[in-house]
Amino acid sequence: MHYLVKSNYIFDAEKRETFSGYIEVYEGTIQNLYLNDTTDLPNCPIIDYSEQMMIPSFIDAHVHFYLSSLIHAGHIHYVSGVTPESVAQKAGELPIHQGWRIGIGWYASDFGQQIYPDRWVLDTYTGSIPTMLISGDAHTVWFNTAALQTLAITSATIPNEISGERLMKNGELSGVFLEAIAIYYIAGVLEKFKAQAPKACLTYMAHLNKMGITAVGDVALTGESPDDLVYPELYRSIESEATVRMSFYPAMRLNVSPLQKMSASYQSPMLQMGGVKQFFDGVTSSHTALLKEPYYVPYGEHDVGTSLLPIELMHELILLANQADLPIRIHAIGDRAIQLTLTYLQEAQMNYPLSAGKYNTVEHLEVMDPIDLPLTRQTNLVLSVQPSHLLVGYDTLDCEVGPERARNMFPFQSFIQSGATLAFGTDTPVVLDITPLQSIYYAVARQTDEGLPTEALMPEERMTIGDALYAHTQGAAKALSRTDIGNLSKGKRADFVILNRNLLNVSAQDILTTEIVATYLSGNKVYDKLESN
Image (cartoon, rainbow, N blue to C red; front, side, top):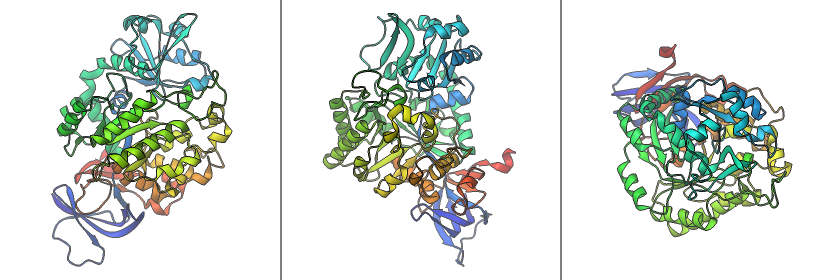
């Protein structure tokens, strides 16, 4: 396959600007670039997108692919509410799949501070059908009594070798579990859907292509549970049909040898083990994010959250990963977790520098202490952030961490000014069906689709459209430690997207009405808006 693509607005990710010319595609790679005034163009067909914008295809740097594909396939349904009873009532109306009702989307923080649901309110509406409700941040699970019985969960059977919390009420299990224990049980229930997973994954990939996405980073949902919901064997079974490049990150363990062998086994253009993942802390909504000072409305004495693993062990795992030349991605949301993560990664790079083209990443960095911003400027480090998280429950941030800390949350522009490299992702299914164009809008406007809050959320942290485009293309490629995608230059894979307008010349609000015209993977069109209508 040999052809030219013509556009007056070809995005140069490094310069954050466009140029007018041609991209030569040959056998799936970018063979050459030509300016408009070139007279010696190769003799091959020309696809003319003159007045439309050509960009590297989008990369979602942070996803939980298996869970997201099951939601897209309709096996798991969204459910939320402002009281436990309102959520439980909706749960009772969920369809039954594989003998279970399964929902996702509720947040305990929507019920108020230190208010958790229990299995008895869920029993009222779900009866004898096993029901599992996953929190919106996927760090908490809520079961009814039938689910506990089906899974044979009692105080005596809960695994003690992994961290997390079992919530009790009147001396009995309430049916609510946090962190690694929650993921342990979630993975067990979702095992029932493995037979349907290949089709669900391929269908979900086609859905991502419509958004202009051709590569994702599939990261472990837990750092401790034996099943981290990352399934390379499943992805390999569909590799020949896949339309999204998959870089996956299983949980980092003390026994590095199996991870090194896995990494060597998965290094194809479509399926790669990009490195490993670990969790320093949890989330602010459940007070499991690790803070320097107590929460604004503390749940108990000196309530600063928690490290999910002993801090000394996390330190050791980071050093071990880089010593084995494995990039590591660390979930760090609280300011204390962020500070320690950045410090340990800096130490790792000094002692065990990664090979060229490989990058460690810090995930989320939500409650940021400005004093630690200089630590974000490190060689071979990427900050993986999710612009849509900025606006999830933004009106409850003051209640969760206090007004002073809330003012410094999600400091995207400050990261850039500090010299850090940003990568964008969604953390799907923490948010559902957020497109890259929406993520760019949230980073640029710092408002919801409806334009709220009116004055924008921390408006001084708004990014330029060019910087946001970079974060969702080349920056995200760096987060995946991939040097073959992410920009439109000679020798890169021909993964690109055509937009219906030049994104650099529009207002923030116009980003939301910008359309994906076509998506290409290795030079092959995997989505065409005209053909899909």
